[in-house]
Image 1 (cartoon, one colour):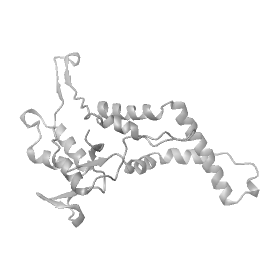
Image 2: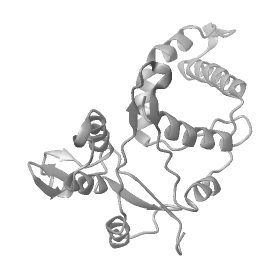
Image 3: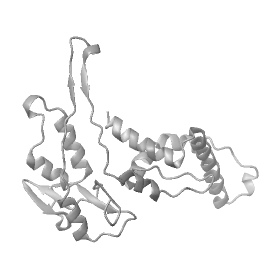
Length: 223
């Protein structure tokens, strides 16, 4: 690592620095429309690339250039880099696009698969672990390696489960003498206790959760 610790990650939705408009790269701050160069664009391109076969199974120089613009440099802790420093770090970053392969054999037992395990630069994961703050006893923590958008996506996906938990909350004693604030607090406290209990049953601590996220990212790749 250099004088300051940092990581290089994809730009989330709403964080694009540039948009692709036709064949032109335009500053996002000008609201040019087109396609934001962010993690959504990266995922779309990776999906398209994965279906290429034969001699077409490679990334063009233009595709690599556009994907590199989808990254940003984050200081650890955040907020220590000015725009010039962030841009310089990305400009000096080489993006290598490597294709995994699957070669069918005469039967499935003879298939040959190549999986690429990308090992981060020295200090990257170590610094991430050092930045983790241990939660208070009995309090849940934010899963590592996630974007803020993920919270809304997960809450939407879990909506049925949340509603089920609300419906199953037992009526408190003395309900007839409770005001709306007390009723809401009863629901909140009951659901919080159940969720914390379930999280404790999983027995995944903060450090283990970080390592789990790294392992899932490395091995699953959205399969």
